[in-house]
Structure formats: structure tokens, C-alpha cells
Image (cartoon, rainbow, N blue to C red; front, side, top):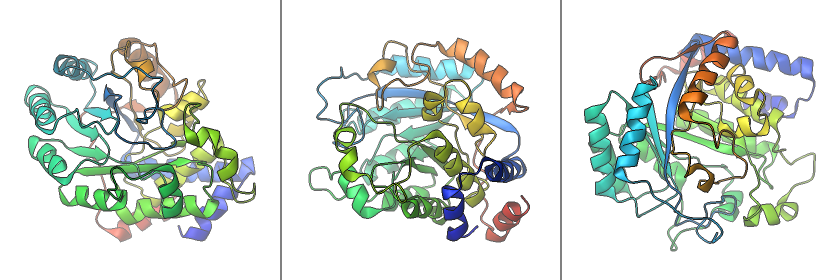
Length: 358
């Protein structure tokens, strides 16, 4: 799939033609990673963040939210709950919080790896290299760091440097791969100022980085962020601006699957937020193979407000798990067993063969 074809599908609006894209993505998903839907238990360990990203409700200047950090006991209890529910992975996510100390997190990783069969994924922002090395040595298996947009000018606008330290997430992603992590990244769909060419370049970047995991979701404006307030100033003319809508996000999911057949691709909470009836299921039948149920204690979930009105804020992990299993079976899929490690291939010709077989 070349860039022109990616652009064609991103601009396609005919529902019957799009059925071909959904079918191709689902066929490639089935051959490359199978029919299992792997469940990753999400633990939002802190909503403290040093950054001032224009799009995120957790940004440091936002004084309207109550900040928290989970205790060691709370984190370990969440990991134990993941085992009880049969999940193969826990994902520890936070803002870029330097109060989550390197050694403390390393101890927690070691304990989870010692006490459980879980894979450990981290999503903690742009931490220094020594932190990434220490956590990998402690046993962390995966790291998620979304580059949000491959357009350097747009990235600079929405993601200010921290303490005059230049931000280069692409370089960090390459370093994570060198350290032996399974590497995940992704983008927001429909950022004000994001062109169709930009999003096509994003999808090409997924392939260039040979990502193990790819997460894409729509930009959902948070009212207490600068990007929500200045969106009209940044937005491009309609023929160039990518919409932050549900259908375009499904296109990005499907195209990510075609570009990176063996990647693990979640049907995100953001999709379930824009379409609470069946957004998650539609993502799964259009290329995705992962869901990330939230294990964060209920009292903290409303405080982790990257964007407002997130799905499943008040649903207990046990209730959600039962409902999710049923919905996965309803679309003819099975709940995955084990860690669900990446099946990324090193043979580029095998990847091309899987794609063209669709």
C-alpha cells in the first residue's frame, strides 16, 4: 500500500467503497494476528504531569483538577485483579510525572513480574534514558509513547518543550526498540491543523518504525485546554483538514492494520466514547485486536481526564469484563489467552504478502 492509496482511502466517503477497506483490514488482521482479542488491564497510576501539551486535560497548568498518585498497594492490587480476570498484561499509565520515581517503579515492576505471569507495559511519557534502561532491566516488556503527529511544525505547536529540552519522540521510540521493549505509538485523528497529507505520513511512519503496537483515536477537545479554545484558528480549509470524527478514525485503524499487519492495535476508549453503543466493536471488525479495560480504582477515574466524558468511568472491572466478553463473542471473536506478545515480522516480503492477500 503506497502513500497515494492511503490518501485515497482517507478521503473516501462512499459507504459501499469503504466496506472494501473494512473487509481488507479485517482479513489481514485475521491472517496476521488471528481472531483472539487480547485484553490489557489499564492502571492510571498518576494524573500528575510536568508537561503543558495544548490538547491534554492533565496538562500542568490546569488547576481545575485534583491530582493523585496511586500507592504501591493500590497498584499491586490492580495487578492482582488483572490476573483474577485472566488478563495477560497490565498497562501502567500516567502523565509525565517525575514524582513516580525511577527506583520505586522498578521495584513495582519486579514485584509484579515475580508474583504474576503478567506482561508489563509502561506509558509514562518522555522519561530520561536512564529511566527507560532501569525499567527494562527490572522486567518491563513494552512501552507506549504516542508521537501524536509526524508534522514537526504542528507537533511543536501542540507539544511545547519541557525546560528548554527539545522533544523528539521518534528518536525515543527508536531507542526503546534498541533497549528491547515492544514499542507502541500512535496519533490523534483530526487535530486542528492536521492535513490529510499529515495523516498519511503518520501511517507511513507506523510502518517505518515497525511498531509492535499502534493506537489511534479521535482528538476529543477538553474545554480547559488551549487547543480547544484556539481550534478555529488552527483548523485548515475543509478540503485539507482531517475531521476528528468516528469514520475517519476507523479509516486510520484499518490503514494502520494494512500498513503493519502484525501490530497489536487497540480499539480505543476514545472510540467507545464517541460511539458508546458499538464503537469498540466496530474498531475490532475494522482491524483492531486489543481492548484495554480500566482497572483503576473507581474513585480516581474521573480525575484522569485527558478528555471529558470518557467511557466506562463508573463501571466496575468485573461488570465490564463480563459485558466485554459477551460483546467480543457476539462479533465472532474469542478472548485471547496469555500475554498476547507482538507478532511483528522482520521479513518485509512476508508483510507485503499478507497485505496483498486481502
